[in-house]
Amino acid sequence: MMQNNFENNAETDSDGGAATQGRYFDLVYIFSADPQYAQDVANALSVYNHEVLGFSDLDELRSAILVRAPAALVLDVDSDSGKVVKESMALRVITSFPVIYISSNDQFEDRLLAVREGAEGYFIKPIDPQALSVRIDEKIAQNTVRSYRILVVDDDEFFLSFFDAVLSSAGMHVKALMDPTQILDAIKTFKPELILTDLYMPLCSGIEMAKVIRQNNHYLDIPIVFLSSETEMQKQLGALETGADEFLTKPIDPEKLISSISIRAERYRNLRKKI
Image (tube, rainbow, N blue to C red):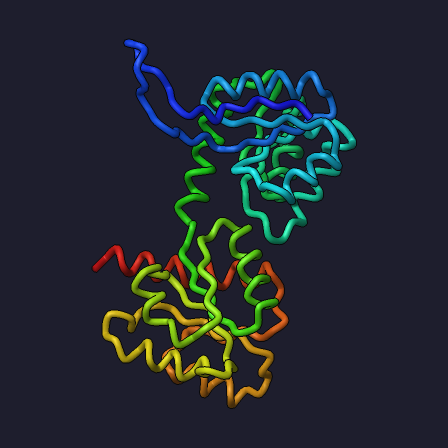
């Protein structure tokens, strides 16, 4: 693994003083089967204020993503290992960072395949580092905009940790709550854009909690999504009658969970902008 780390604590201005304290640089991973090429691209991107890690080993890249997901991945697809990585990225479930391809191939078919695989950009070698940096910044910014605040309520620690991990890996800000009786304080301090809650909890059921939330006129429009292993349609409909927006059944596919939460949180955010 090759590394360029630019997490400086401060920058200096033209007079030699500290201009920016604790500036944060977005983490970008570079993968190429050619170690020298990965290093060259990493060096070029580091000039544009990115924290850059370069990889030429597939297993190292996979491990790094599991430990710390990047804000973006730049992927050289002109090798067998590069093709393996892009196939893996196309099938990923809980990571949402943008992937940008670089290649020597400039055929329509290659570009169309990149679109179908979900690539957020396609750059031809030799790349323009500045243009690549601009695209990376654009895509990171789009992901950041969708960093919804999600309040998850579940008395089961396993499910709470699971939902936290899935939604956090998709770029969302998650607050986990095991005690539903603390819901009003959590709403005040966290200001969630969606509440994801279990239906059956001993201290206070999800239905009871939803009714308490809806008693406050300020919270009438916060989306509430129920999660439960309950499959009886009548009980699901009864839960929705409390003012909840959706009923999801456990176990749930992570991709479906992310999609459902994103759609409703985005709708709520857009409505709040109009008020």
